[in-house]
Image (tube, rainbow, N blue to C red; front, side, top):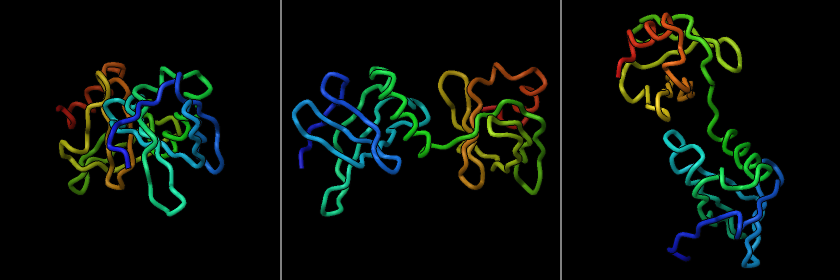
Length: 170
């Protein structure tokens, strides 16, 4: 096993769609891998950067092929494939509107509109349940470990922002 980090770039790597929600990866050095899956090293702070690609060896071991520093460097078709794989693994709801937040049973009950429809979820009222996201957003992790993303708190209406910051002020 090699301990040296292999950086994957558009110049040394070709990525294609594989079977069963995986990727096929072809390296300039002649190596090729099928059934490749992607893992984000920093899924919250840097969702498009430092993406590690892995494959399963014939003996069943998981080995790393290398790391993509930024998928935005790759051609659009390859970037879309990588993002589709990551989005299936790092599923989240984008909050479009906050309807209400109530204190209930020692938890916060959120009533929201998301990119996937209206949702209600419970959030523990603790710092680890509301994580900073990019410059001005938050990721809320509910009691079932589902992720609800507010891309930019400043884009909430004044009423929504007041409801939100009444409970989540850090």
